[in-house]
Amino acid sequence: MTREPGVERHRLYEDVAAVLIGTLVVSLGLTLYAKTVLITNGVAGLSLLLQYATGLSFGVLFFSLNLPFYWLAVRRMGWRMAVRTFVAVALVSLFTRLTPTWVAFERLEPLYAAVVGGGLMGLGLLILFRHRTGLGGTNILALYLQERFGIRAGYFQLGVDTMIVLGACFVVEPDKVALSLVGATVLNLIIAVNHRPGRYMAVS
Image 1: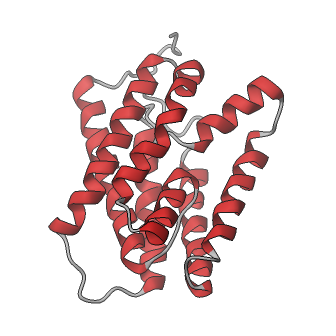
Image 2: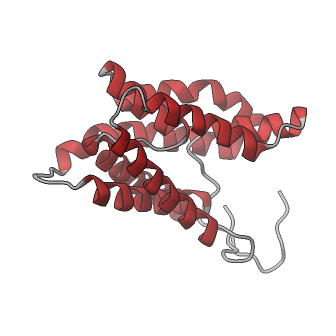
């Protein structure tokens, strides 16, 4: 892969540290959401929704639901990024199981959890994105469908997230759905403001 002259490449230890920290931060945000029965977008949101509906472990659901997307990740992003994504998904699955044993909340306001949890997930994703690592899921499928069939990725992702929100209306309370939308706004604002071309030049 070619890179622009003067663009610094991340060292291996920097990538390893970023993946560990990024997945830990995302997992803490997801723990806040699980504690207050909120949802988020993408496969993580679907996994939370299924956890509330079935009682199955979020980590098991998140890891399993991402499995079909890895072959698309290889085609869309190449082996290196696909392997990093697989590792990141596995770590989030593990850390979301361990985080409740590391931290406990006697009182947690849902609005606080929505804003701070969404912020933590946004920051964790930002760390991962800047080290060419993702968390799998429907965004990979959205990009594939756009390239293969001309379906707009943004519209597809919006449709998937809309279905998750509609499904949540049958599982969680309406006020929790509204708070989840607040958290999603915070998450997406962090990514939109900070993950733009020219703002971070190092590559992995």
